[in-house]
Image (cartoon, rainbow over all chains, first blue to last red; front, top):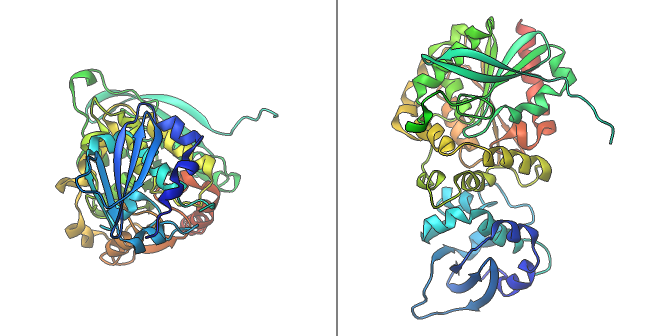
Length: 123
Length: 284
């Protein structure tokens, strides 16, 4: 397990970019970190719940899953090329992206910011 | 803050492009060897602001950039409201030649980035004698379709913000924040469907020139290929694969840059470009 998702709520609180790009964003986001699943619930752009799995039959809008080693490299302060962005992971088939791609496209700045916040110090 | 005026001139050119009257926006700076610069898909000439403001370059080069029709301050052609904009490889190459003719550029150097980097290869292949040098930034002969185009033009998604978000990661994380966000702003200002329309040839069979690269003769026109290391759309490996099929092509990787070198970090980009321009100047 690599992603410090248990700290996501605090990291995201008051973030100006999330506020700027999160207008009316509602999403049940499943994040897979190796064998561990997390459910991030976003309402109107605010992260209201972060829960650690396993889940039996979670209702989700979007599912992003990668190996822990991949997330580990993604989280490096200066990530190497190919590991520095969600779509860079996608280009090299290191992440599985499933679900409502319309929703993901509409709020891609928000989602990229959310994951970038996990990289910042303060884990 | 003291107001300063940049040594950049912008003007409108009324010209026939691809058989239709167009009102084209052009920017220029400097004098000497004409260097025509081609912007990326869904963006405009502002990407070359760093180049146009570099006195060392504009002393010897007349840097020229134009907003392609439908882009930046160039209007779409009359009747656009009933058309779907789709750029083809042949139209793009012809457009560049028609702009060269309209501006009476004599054997200019041409430099293009991304889709402009692809058309640079096409120009090298089909019109080498028209240019004194060709520089491809983020040039690849084809592209891995790792993303969906649908959402760049769809009533339920803000296409220009989505386009900007899709390309945002193509820049190097260490590029200056202000320049990265300015680069994205250009994308956010793009007209509806334009980024997607530019990618029509770039992503499709029409633009896949892998099998034709061997036809490029760098003895007729030298070809320089520069690629930023953080670009995953056209990665250094993609450009290297193209360069290996072109005898005499000069390829180099630009560390700490991504897909928009001239715009995401102009100062760093110029350190890689200056030796290339010096070589072009040396050849006369």
